[in-house]
Every structure is written in C-alpha cells, then in structure tokens.
View 1: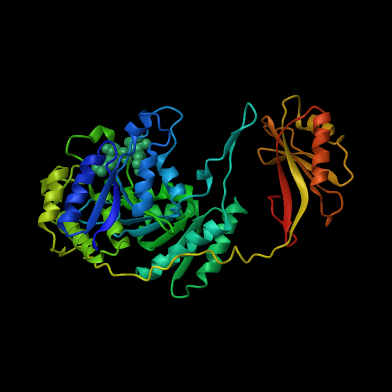
View 2 (view 1 turned 90 degrees about the vertical axis):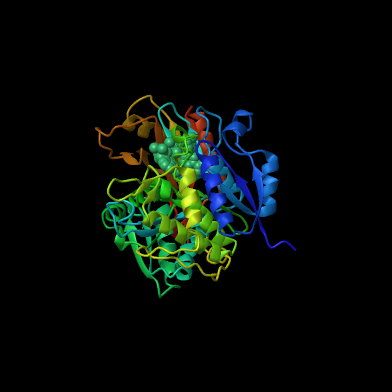
Length: 479
Ligand code: NAD
C-alpha cells in the first residue's frame, strides 16, 4: 500500500505556476509524501466557455483526493463568470477559512513587531450566498444569511482551533448594535459556545471599534472569529500588516474536503518574471501538511522558511535596504529554503507542529430547537413613485383586512408613515408593514394572500413580501 497522500494540485494563472513550482519543490525536498493529480482551472477554462472556471472532470479528482492545493487564478474581466473560489467552497462544504498571520520582525519590515493573529472566517454564508435583487428602478438589495448551524460550526471550529493550537483567546467581531438579528445570532452563539471553553479567554467587539484596535494594537489579539464579509476584508488587512500580502497562506476546511491556497491573487503584472514571493502558497501548503498529518515535514518547511527570512534572503516585496541581505527571485528563494531544510531559526521562534485532537465539528444546538413559531404579520414591499409618503399611506390605509392592520410604512428602513418627517429622502422601494389586528393573534397564510389580492386590485406593483414570525413569543423581525 502506498504511504503517499493523494492530493489535487492546480497551477492557476499569473504568478500561480511559478509559486506552485517553488512550493512543490520545497515540500517534496523536505520529504512530503504526496501522490499529485494535476487539474486545470482558471482563466483558460473560463475562456473555453466554462462559466465556473473548472472542468467537470476536475471535480472527480477532488472527490477522489479530498485535498486541494490551489494556486491563485485570474477571473476574466466582464460579466457571466462565476467565482471559482466561492463555487469550490460551497460545493465542497468548506465552511471554515483559516488565515494565520505572523510578523517576522525585525527581518521583515512591519509597523507591528508583535503580530500573531489567526483569522477564522465563516466561508459559505452571509452576503456571499450571492442572493441579490433589483426589483425597482432605483434600489438594489442583497440577502445577508446567517444560520444557526453555520454560525455554530465556525464558532466551535475557532474554539477547537484555539484549544488544539495552544491559543489563549478567541475574539468575536460583529455588528449587532445595527444587525440585531443576524449579527445578534452570531454574537449570542459565540457567548453560549464560549462557555464550553472556560480555559480560553473571550472577548467580543463591535467590528468597527475592534478593527481600529486590531490595526493599532494587534498584539492584543490571538484568534478572531468572524462572519464571511468581515473576515474577507480583515484577513487581507492583517496579512498586509504582517509585512506583505504575499506572506499569507490559508486553509479552507470542511467536514470531508479541504483546500489550501495563498491569500493573494494571481498578480498578473508580476507573472513570468521570476519575481513573486511564493510564501503565501508555501505556508498554505504547510497548513495542508498538518491537515494530512505530515506534521514533521510541515515543521521542517516552516522552520527552513523562517531561517531563510532571518538570513535576509528576500523577494522584492519584502526586500528592504539595511535589513535584507540578498534580493532573490522566486526560484532562488525556493532554493535558499531547500538549502536550509533541517535548520531552525535562531532569533525567530521555531515551530513544532504536533498531531492534534481533530474532531469533526457538529452543530448541536440547532437540531434540538423546539421553539414555537407563529405567523403574526407581513411586510409588503412595493415599487411606487407617484407621490409623497403621506399620499402612499392614505392609499394603503384603504386596504382593509379583518386580520391585519397597517402599522407603518418605511423607506430605506426609516419610518415615513404615519407621523413621518416631510424631509426624509425616499426612494422607490416602500415597506408596508401589516400586523395582526389583535396582538397575540396568530395568522393563517390565507390572510396574506387575501391582503395581496387587495394590493393587486388597487394596482400596486408588490415586488416582494417578508412574513413576520414570533419565536417563543419574541419578534423574529426588526422593529
Ligand atoms: P493580487 O493579490 O493578485 O495583487 C495585489 C498586489 O499584491 C499586487 O501589487 C501584486 O503585485 C502584489 N502581490 C500579490 N501576490 C504577490 C506575491 N506572491 N509576491 C509579490 N507580490 C504579490 O490582487 P489583484 O491584483 O486585485 O487581483 C489579480 C487577479 O487575481 C484578479 O483576476 C483577481 O480576480 C484574482 N484573485 C484571485 C484570488 C484567488 O484565486 N484566490 C484571490 C484574489 C484575487
């Protein structure tokens, strides 16, 4: 039986092939036992007419190996091309995106000598569900989806990661002062799940204040868990703060599959010139070696990289007069690391990766939910430009229902009827809220259909509805 671990490799576009060659040369020289299958993804696949940038046969390689080492790709300009990264994460269920960022001060210039932060980003939900609409001429909208099982899994992953990697603190960033239901759920689950990890310090920040703190005092942070969009933005910022975006590697982890890559893109302007820093992909490959349980090789590669950095052998992006000793290209940098395999850094902290207690993360809270759910109203959104908020309110007031009454009209979330402010700027999308005539009453869906029939009879273009529910008597909708 072969002791080699099968992996799928994609060389990508732009600087992709150069940094992938460097990465594979280094990890194989270090003794990684890999059985490599190569697939084609990216620009050429898109241009051949495949809207997802990956051929159907490439999926079968991934299904077989379950481990994907991927170089960055170029998404062609223009519409109609789907993001390969988003598609891969969703199809393979890669719910956790892990991005460790570590300063190598004073060998790599950074304003933040002490920076050792791991971003744990939710990878499938949030605004990245890609559910967007234009239903009126003036207004567009996107759906932010935050689920209980999705949030629970990523938060548990963050705490388990901290526990297994000797990390002391897990910080949660969110914005539940504004997004009380979506980010509120994320924060609540963080608080609840955190209680199961008494040994780990916990801290929650509203993302704006937290990011400002992170940008100035990264030494106060350890593991940070966030929703998808916040994590996407902040992980690039933290990678750049550590010295260069070219330094960040990332792991995308699911229950069955995993993908490893650099944080950065295909840097087309640097392609083919033997200039690019292969570190991001190499450190992604280190995360892969840990995942496939070749820990000793992972440590060997990472320590040789640290030693190379310490010896001042630097690519252009991290080269600084006075600190760096030798400016090298991609190939020479890889060679310098290979020559140092087996060595450890003397000033920077050497790394020693060990097998971990990797347990499958399961969401426990969501399956057992026995909350009661009662339909108590409906928001009817209409496209309307024929007058003022007061004019609209008086027309909607004519819509009569025995079960439902109009409780207010808002425009862009601001109440404009009744008792609106004449100066409020309004667009063409109006939300008309109807709630049960008697508080505590429960509605049947038929009442909503009857109401919509009246909107139709009055000639309104109703573009969408959102049902209003109470859960265990508490409102499941923003007030
Ligand atoms: P980029 O990350 O490719 O480049 C941003 C800047 O960082 C450039 O100045 C570049 O020269 C520099 N840089 C990036 N990686 C470097 C490295 N390894 N060594 C030295 N310098 C490096 O971002 P971009 O220019 O916005 O995007 C270029 C292409 O990459 C686009 O087509 C984009 O869609 C794609 N992209 C792909 C991925 C991915 O496949 N995971 C991620 C991001 C962007």
